[in-house]
Length: 30
Image 1: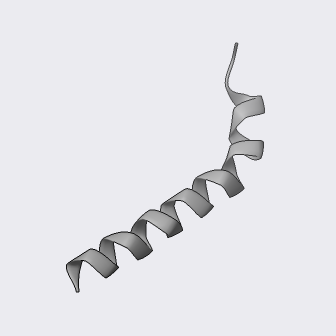
Image 2: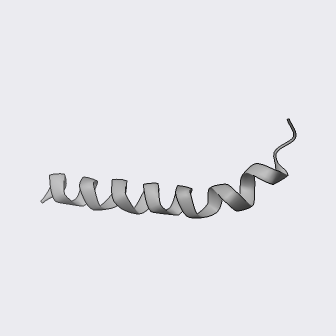
């Protein structure tokens, strides 16, 4: 159960990062 939970969290985190990256990166100086 924990392994599947970690897998789901990892996929969700990766998707969230990939979704927010285009919005956040332009705001980061440099």
